Length: 78
Image (tube, rainbow, N blue to C red):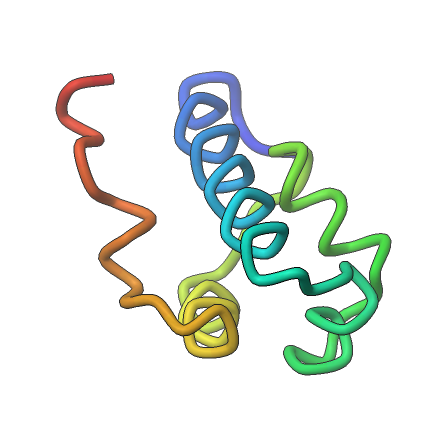
């Protein structure tokens, strides 16, 4: 579980993962298989319930066809 001060970041990243995945019509299971994680773990990332390592975030970005920077855009405004 992320530390409370990091929670806003993990919530935002999770929303962005879920939004992009849904826009692509990709299931959680498909994304999970591509990044070698369980669908349950992807759901935890999407809900901001689990810390996500940079390596995993880069893999997710690759399979969602977006730059990793997408997850960090406008963070200073939040």
